[in-house]
Image (tube, rainbow, N blue to C red; front, side, top):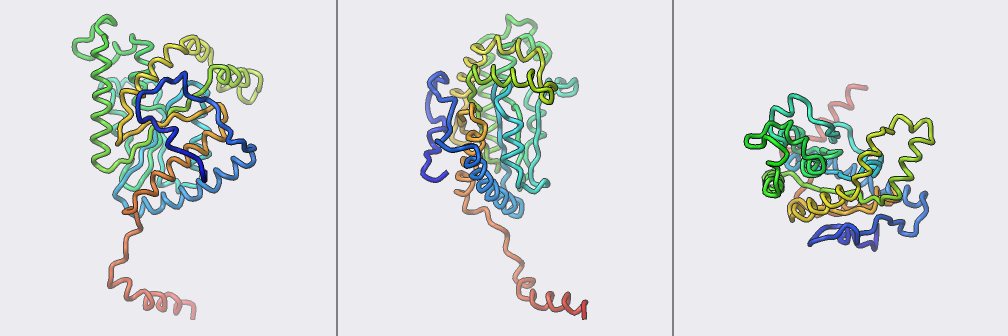
Length: 294
């Protein structure tokens, strides 16, 4: 994305989502955007090999957005050229019984990337200040001391969660995890069109759930929660990026470009040097192998 200002997508102060664009095309055709993404993701794939060999950093990519925002397809397309050993995708659904026996961050801690690897969170720990804030009754299933009724869940409760999330991200960042948080900013009209496609196209029917329409009715509540969460938790070590998501191809290019540009700044991430003795004897080892065919 030469000559494009990627900093415009980074949250560096208070934001109003209603003032943020949901559509970007760069005046490019789908074919041009596809070609651009192919070039960027090849570079990302090479970087991932270097990160794996270096073995000191992990990379956490967090994707949030309303239903149909394009999270699944973005993961498929942006990380297509990665070595499968170097990237793991985690999709966080409704907490299981086991997960509910732990604090809400536990399942995210155990899914963090090992050093040298990428982890992609498809929906993230932010569900705990988004879905649960729109549906506070879900909190009761966590069996938190002192929270016995929805009335016990006040603003102080949510402020504590924002603090806990910031602490969580600060802790993992200080221990070698590079964090990128992307909000795929979709318009309500584009979501309507995508839901209609799920109904009209037989091969897409499996993606549709009547529950999508129930959640859509809560659009405004979700926008308020997203805005507050983004403003409370976009930090230097764990920034949020607001990505226009109405055009999926452009959104993928933006996300891939932000990742590549930011990761390239870590000049210490290099392949390790061979042991001096081994390096000095490479020619001997080569000759030994070549003689096997004589």
